[in-house]
Amino acid sequence: MVQSKTELFDRELTEQAAFFKALAHPARLRILQYLSETDTCITGDISDEIPLGRTTVNQHIKELKDAGLIQGHIEGVKTKYCLNPEKIELLKNLTRKFTNGLNCSSNTCS
Image 1 (cartoon, rainbow, N blue to C red):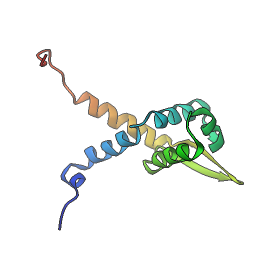
Image 2: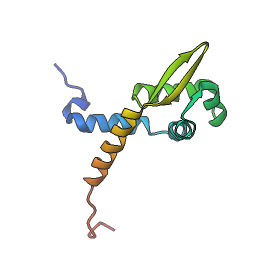
Image 3: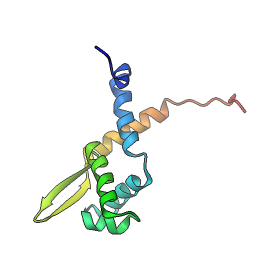
Image 4: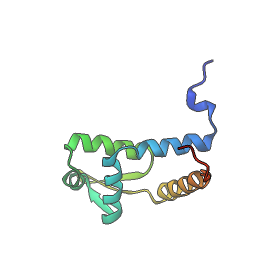
């Protein structure tokens, strides 16, 4: 049976890569910032804040939801989104651990 390329790496690196992939677009970073600033919001509010069409914003929201970084709650005909505190803390810890493991010596190539 053929292994997928992600299976060749340990679980922690795969988890970090999934988070980093979810963060790999400025619109997604802005959505996270906006949710952090407002605590919760309605989907339409996010579309008003991001200079992209509603459909495109919804695609970015889906990526963030799939990564677990945000969560949505249906209220009537609208969905309210907020940050997922547990996943945000995990992201902070994984990022800190990853970047702390990157050592730059003063003998870098020029």
